[in-house]
Amino acid sequence: MGVSPSDRDHAAPSPPRCAGGKPRVRKLLPKMALLCGACVLVLLMLEGATRLFTHVVPPLLVNDPVVGMTFCPHFSGSVFVPESSREVFLRFNREGMRGPDWPYDKRPDVCRVAIVGDSMIAAIATEEEKTLVNRLGERLNGSAADPRFEILNFGVSGSSTGQELVLYREIVRKYHPDVVVCAFCVNNDFGDNCSRLTSNRGRIYFEVGADDQLVQVPLLPGRAALTSWLNRHSRFYVWQKDMTQRAINNLRGQAMQLAARAGHETTTVDSGGLGVFCSEPDDTLQYAWRVTEKLLAAMHQEVAADGVEFLIAAIPAGLQIYDDAWQQVEATAELPIDPRYPDKRLTAIARRLGVPLVLMTDEFRASAPHHSQAAVEEWLHYDAFGHLNDRGNDVAAEAVYHELLKRSAVYITRRPTRAEQ
Image (cartoon, rainbow, N blue to C red; front, side):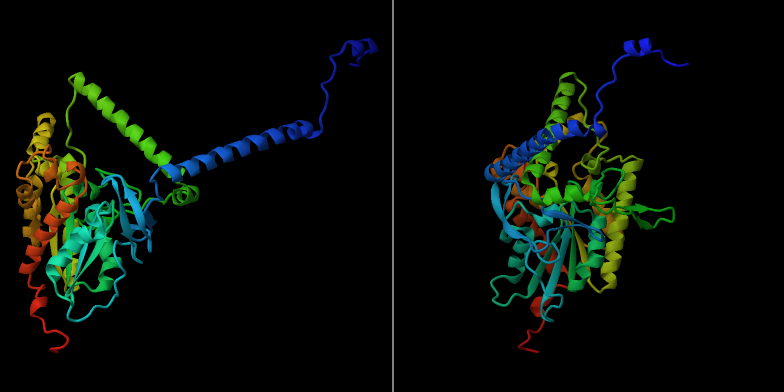
C-alpha cells in the first residue's frame, strides 16, 4: 500500500545520519585519550610514591616448573624485612638458594652437608652469618684456617617435604653431599605436605595412591604473564596486594573477636597448623601423617642409595615453648591436642625408617626458662611464633652440631689432609 503525499507530510522526521558514527567517535577520542593519560599519570605517581616511601621490593620467589619454587637466581642486595624490622643483605646463588655459588665437585678432604628445608632454613629475616647454616659451619670448622666442612643452604620459603625430595633429585645431589639434613618445621610442614590441608600454587604435593605408592601431583599453571610482569616490575602492585591481604586478615580477626564475644569461639585443629598437635587425629590428619612418613622414607631411600648419610631435624614451634600461649590455645580447641605429639610421632617415624632424628624442643625450652611469651628477651622466634631469630638459629645449630658429631659419616677430623696424602 502506497503512502500519500499528505501522509509523507505528517511522517516523523528521520534522525540525522552519521556515516558509521565516526563524527561522535572522533569527538570522544580526545576525552578518552585525556582520561587514559590521567590514569597513567596517577599510576606513575603511585609507583613513584611506593618506591620513595615504602620498603616494598619485588617478590624474591620465582616459580620453577621442575622444583616448584626457588629464590631469584643471582639476586644480591639489601632488603627490608618487616618480620625483623630491619634491612637484611640477601644473596642467592645460581640455583636460587641462599648463599654463595658452590662448585659441583668438592675437595676429597672436605665433608659437605646439605640442609634442605623451608623458610626456617632460608631465614631471610636473619643476616646470612647468623643463620642456622652458617652457625653450624662455624661450630664444625672452629677456628681452622682451612675449613673442612661446607654447609650448603637449600632452604626455600613455602617449601614442603615433597618439594625438598624433588629438590634433592634435581639439584642437591649434583653437589655430592656427604650428609643431607632434612629440616622439618613443626609449625607448618605437616600441613604443607598434604593438599587436603593446604593449597599453594607453587608448592609440590604428593599423594599416596591406591598401590600405597607416592604420586606427584602436577603443578598448577603459573601466574599469567601480566601478573608475573607486574610482580617483578611494579612496587605499587606488590604493595596493594600486601595491603589487600592484610585487610582481609584483619577482617577475619575482627570476625573471630566478634564470635568470641558472642561465646562461639573455638579453635579447630583440622588445619595444617594445630592439626600437627592433635593427639587423636581424624582420617584427614592420619592421611597427612601417612604422606609425611612416605615422603621422609622416599628421601631417605634416595639419599642412602647415593651413599649419603641422612637425618631429620625437627624445628619446634613457639607453642611448644611458651606454656601460657599453649594454655590459651588448648582452652578453646575442639579436639585433644598435645604439644609433644609431633615429637612422639616423628620419633616413631624415624625409628621405623632407621633414621637419626634431632629433636630440639628441650633445648629450646631450656633457652627460654620462663616458658612464657611475655618474656620477650627469651624469644627464639620473631614475635615469639614466627621464623627463628638470631638466638633461635644459634640454638638450632647447636642441636644439629651435636648430632652430626655422633654420625659415622662425619669423621672429617680424622681424615688425612691433602698434605698427609
